[in-house]
Length: 96
Image (cartoon, rainbow, N blue to C red; front, side):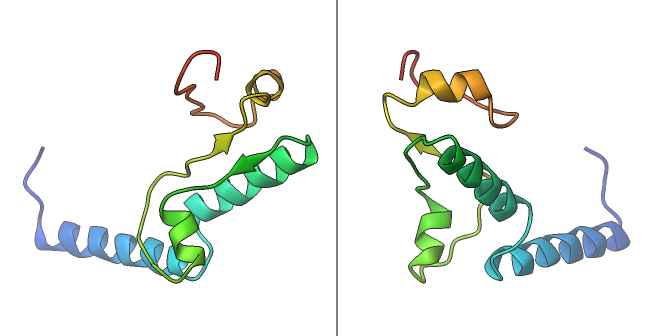
């Protein structure tokens, strides 16, 4: 990794703070992705839960995250797999 100039550090810090502000205001990439996936799962009739930092934030325990975790009921993965609701999907355990 190259050495960062003070201007690079300032730019990266500003970007991080902007992303954090959007996240804590209920917006931003991670929250938007989770909301979009949740809407598609609900539309498809697939039961799901959103754990982790996003869930904690809904209960006033704020934590910044860069990932949206989604739990799907055991009967849902086949239907989910047929739909492939997003990129970066990872099957935690083959077969559910």
